[in-house]
Length: 408
Image (cartoon, rainbow, N blue to C red; front, side, top):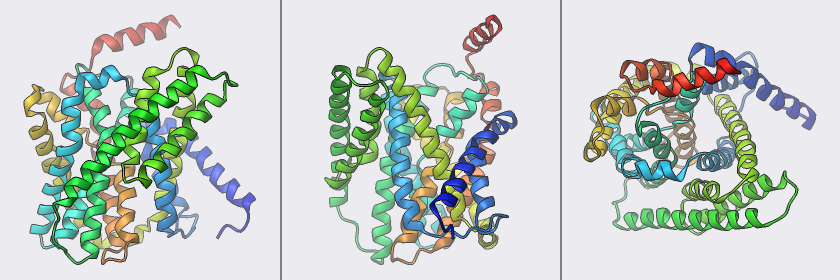
């Protein structure tokens, strides 16, 4: 146990510093940078050289909630309205129906292999949403630009699909804890309420924050503070009234950035980009600390089977169904299916059933953790190569970028 504030500050700041210093190594290796953060957390954890035992799932959940809200807000700030207009149909389908199909296919497959149906569906819901952050870091780090609306679809889907996965997880956790109570049609209304309240709150919150920032005369550094505090207040308030705070902060970021003008837009981009990075590092370090790798031995084959079903069956099927009406080429569909990386959100959601009083134990968390690692390693390492192999890389953008670099 860390006994003083000074030691805690030294350890946390040192780990963040180490994570930043090692990030160029991940880019050179073509690896998802988030693996570095997870790996450092595991090395400091109970089974690593650090030997620090951390098993406070409740604290991890609360810290993860705030970190995820900051990450989604920054993601909204980085999403242009014109991108949403280009791909809102396919992105919305992937973020809703796509998550349901993925969760159902994974869950039913696990059930057929002998698991409890509700627990199997719960595991499917937990791994149902994508985390495109690692993908974008890989593509940007390697200077890859994609043709058409592929990138926009992936970006917008990743910002919109978390509320669906969170809703499914919470609902299924309640059924597992209740021993399989009957499904209620009221659930549809609850989900609609969450999305509706979250969307309205996010749009209104973004408009109000933009109006304030554009009109107030503040010291330059305070605009980012105003935006972040407003977004976090929006997150908490929306959650309290039954809406999806995660959807609210994402849409708030989109609207806010679209309505800002001049230097204030640039200031928010830089500041909140840094905050999003810090949130991701802290979140992954903490999640790495939570795991105890010696407990993985009995679940490795189980996790490998789930990862195979998720990557090669469930995600491609969901993408094929959702994108069928939108005239994506087979190459584009294949790439979007392969880019369905799992990251912080599934590991974060796996904490919920472990904290609950039901029958789910820490092995559930360990399985999800291994599935995420498999996704990051298998899919993350091959994304740049696959973009070139499928001829989805926009060479014009690359040529322009290389020309500008030579001039500088």
